[in-house]
Image (cartoon, rainbow, N blue to C red):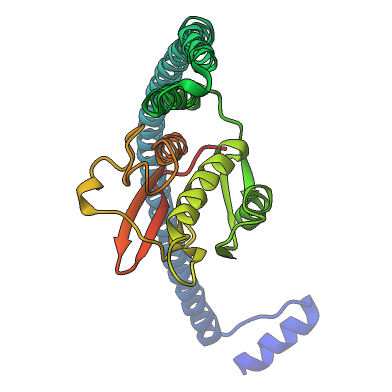
Length: 327
């Protein structure tokens, strides 16, 4: 009956009326929903607290990292400033050294020019007088001069001319030690072929060039060094059977000039690059002991080590680059 009346009232009022049991059930559901809502709100609050804690931790770590980076950056900037100051001091030192070297070279060139003039005038005047008066004396003696007198006069004139050659060699040796260098990149094969064509076109000794590659050097000066070394090899190879000269490049930084000539004695090993030192007698080979000394001086100015060694029945002149020249 209660259910019927409730339905009837629902129809009349237009509202749904619940039975006590239904109302109790719906109340329980509402209570359950409220409990879940409270639990959800509590969980949200926990999540918000956790997120806030993580944000604060992250911000604190970021501040610490930023402070550390700032400290490191300041240290790097201080280090860079110190390096710049050191570089500036080094540049100033290099400039001072360069200026001093330029000044010293200029002074050496001035002294060399003075010495050249002195030799050309003061030193050569007595030589010219000796040569002239020995010629006049021979002319005065005429055909009646004793053979020993003519021989002595010829020896005086020969040695006077030799002294002139030695003076020229000394001036050239000094000049090559202080003259400015014009360093450029050059093809070794082309330079060596040019040297052979200009100075050894009619050489009785076969010269073979097996060289490929480029080096940096002052071309006229290195051509002079190559010329002196090849000339030395040609001179001492003439007396042997089937003389031959080979110019090769065993490695990019090592050039060798090899000949099968008579070579030299080990007693000359320490003096072979000394100016005016001869490794053979005047009656054996021509020359004044100048070529190897000049080649050594030129090589040293190019940071090249020049060695001359006897290997079996061959003489090897080795040019070894020890330090690359700056661009």
